[in-house]
Image (cartoon, rainbow, N blue to C red; front, side, top):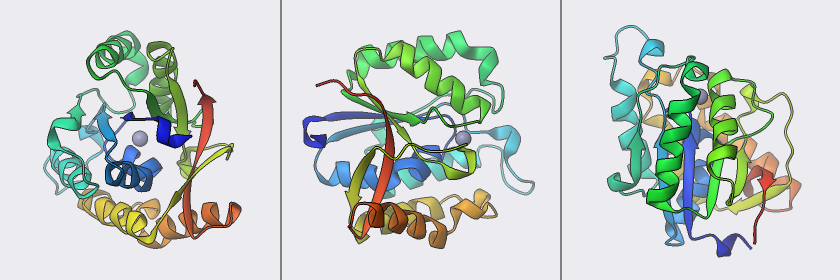
Length: 211
Ligand SMILES: [Zn+2]
């Protein structure tokens, strides 16, 4: 069924959310020659730790998505202020509507309905409005998820998980965050794999499915 999707648009509220939530799936889709676009809505300049340049996350994002196999042309970066997305709901919706017209995706990957981060909630809610006629899956970010509905799985190989870990290791400014550790990424992928009897997987909440 997942083969029927050809053009995938990943909506990441902040740089790194897409890699964390579905980096393995992105690597797999790229390998399968699907067209994958990655949009980050903020490079979170206000949250960059001291000692790093303010634009560090933009550079880290470019390196990370390259390692997942994405073309630089398929990366789009907006500059909304971190934690302030609720103030810019309409602008964000307008940007998404333009993306829909330009890219014409058939699958959207975005934060799940269980995500409690205010910026993530805005991307989810405006995403539901902007991409009304398109299938939408929510990706898993356990540290932001109140609970999670593991209704869809993408089986992954070791190579996909390695690429995800390598991509996340590009975020030198974020390495103090516990969810960035390779150990954690691998064990979550193992857990989701064990749920369906395979080595590794990423799971998704099925928010809307259109055939
Ligand atoms: Zn985020």
